[in-house]
Image 1 (tube, rainbow, N blue to C red):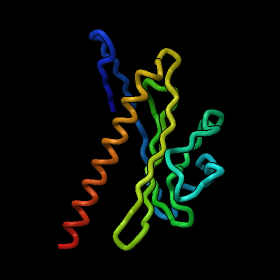
Image 2: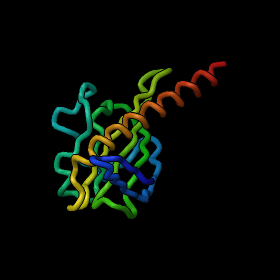
Image 3: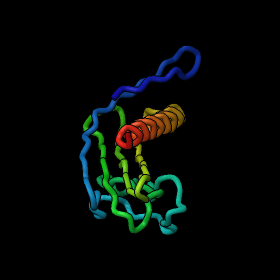
Image 4: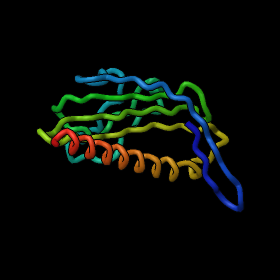
Length: 148
């Protein structure tokens, strides 16, 4: 995956990553492979937890918007090679009703020392939102198609 962005005065920044992706159907990724849930872990939590993740380089971030007590299916991704020191995360799906599924996302990124975080943070946030919106549209279309 390669991302590029115009920064200032005609300067273009790009970064590339090769990711390894793994599926973990129900009951999802084993808890020992994730950071701990935030202390206020509840269905009302928002965002993603990366507290303490800096010291635990091999763990995936816990999706804080997960619903407690609902078995997840997870897809993990982690850096194989690229322009970051660390880049890993989790897509989590939880069936919350007969016709609804919650999709949560958590990401931990540690840039190289030479890479100003301000250059990439907005880009990553925008890409995550675009990806989630695309997954939502696709899921809705598949659900509607299956109902016909």
